[in-house]
Length: 148
Image 1 (cartoon, helix red, strand yellow):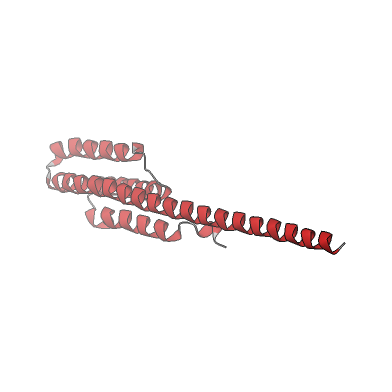
Image 2: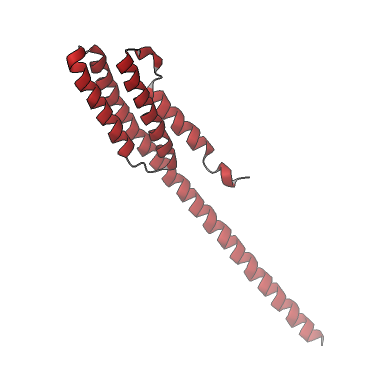
């Protein structure tokens, strides 16, 4: 009878040990996958930021030319700005943060166009800072909904 208790204890110890190893292995795999996902997200956010910075650079140059243009040419340049804004709206971001930044940039572009139409250029915030703020805020909040 003592031999059966000993075999039973060994079996329980083996089962508990295997379960422990499986749990540790699962934890390691989950942490590795999470780390990889964070690295991919960071790279994608950086790429989204670079794309949007390029758009803003072109946008700023076009805005300066539009502000300096005389009325007949100015209307054509405003049409060009509208087309640029539509192109931004069609751009496909890699991340939700890129989507947020794109949408905020598009809204700022529309505000800038309206401002140029009304000849009130001082009413618009810098588009580059809008993109950077959106990316920074979104990146800082990433994953907070599941960390509770």
